[in-house]
Image (cartoon, rainbow, N blue to C red; front, side, top):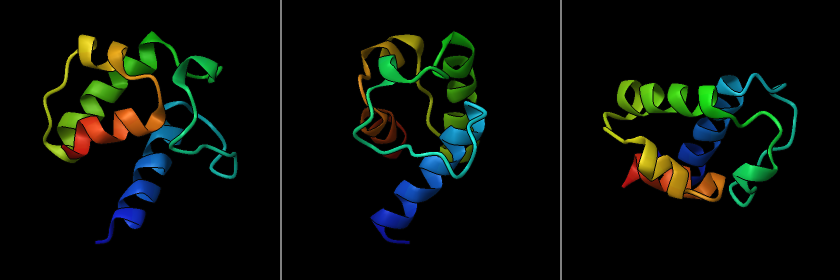
Length: 78
C-alpha cells in the first residue's frame, strides 16, 4: 500500500474518532488545536486506535506534543 493510501485511511479513521462527517475536509496539515472536534476523549480513543490498528504504543505526552494531523500520522507509522 502506498503512502497516500495510508494517509487517506488514517484520515478516515481520525474523522471517525472525532465523529466528523466523512465528507468533511481534514488534511495532514490541519492543526489539532484548531479542530473543534479534537478533545481529550478523542486523544484517549486515538491511543486505543494506535494500538489496535497500527500496533503502536503511544502515550499522552506524545499526543500532546503533536501539533498537526500529520504529526499524529507519523506517531503511528514511525
